[in-house]
Image 1 (cartoon, rainbow, N blue to C red):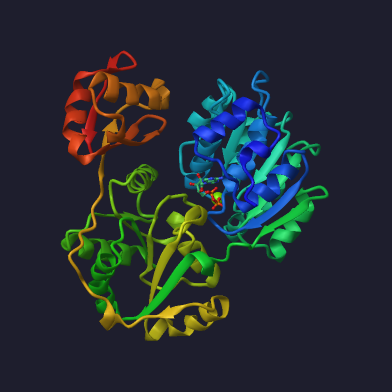
Image 2: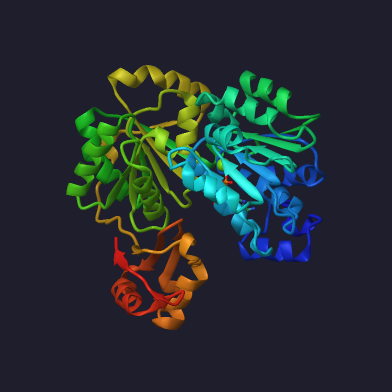
Length: 456
Ligand code: ADP
Ligand code: MG
């Protein structure tokens, strides 16, 4: 029996909001964890990527929130800025039925000073990377004395990145009398040790019910470097993929492959650590809002990202270990959808096959000769309009939507995902309407002001 959210003891408005977000049936991890976390108990949850962990902890955070009390009540620690931003967005969505909830992200890789200013304006919920919040604890003397909830998301990844000491220091600086939830894709010794130090009589929850093998079809091909480059366009065609994520082990290879695909008339983006934060944000936005069909990435840049509807993951190179492999292929088959993962190996990486075969018993070894190119062109329905105004200018999604529909007269379904960042915003617009949207917005006001915009 699949349980629905409305079986939880949540206020009517809360349930209506979840419903409007299209969260109707709970995922396994939500079904198992929410009754416990909503009672205020500590929790350790282990579940694979895409199982809906973010919603699992966002709901108890929002349920606990006293919005009139303008103090930091919940702290979420996450390994990367990208993930922290996604978590903050999810919490904002889940708390839409409450007015004036302030969710603040405090992450490394962006200037420190503006964060200090934001902190002075106050916040209810902080989503942070461990290093940066620690800096705020020591230098800004951030007031965490009202903190009632600590969440660690992707705890395994945080430990991999060497955040153990930082996490311990953060925990030492916050009230002991709190609820703690720890989420992780794996549960190994180091996590256990951390969990025992920071949780209090935790309930352990595991979701192994959906195994990768049931939802992800994994095919492997032996191919040399040169062959891979030629095979990828044919693979995309033969699978009629609409949204493809390709992993390479190096930045150089990412760029090389992107050039090759581009020459094959495939619109492609790259994501790796040579890009600055702004470029990375933009890349993720334009891939996830369906303006670009293919993203070529390294592991570092893409872990924990929640990009929906990827129907094909390609491992140009085999990952360094099984854990990374699982994280990569977990990008497809999100929240129960069926996924497809294709991996290449060659003489040099053959030795890694053993570890994969040990972990998955349904790998398919394909013959590259059988991949057939056909007459399919991978293409996206949307293009992105860049708007030079964001949260700092009090721009909201509703303002943009209003300007485009009521103002310019575009139909509602011409407008896709809207991303509002601190200073700028991005709107996905169906291709056939992009020129009208652009010209219209240039002449229309948003928040009483003319804004600059351009087509990305
Ligand atoms: P995880 O953190 O476990 O990898 P996420 O929390 O990022 O997974 O969730 C993956 C996707 O599933 C997100 O796009 C989220 O909006 C969606 N999702 C989560 N819970 C539900 C639900 N109950 N019903 C439908 N979609 C959901
Ligand atoms: Mg997650």
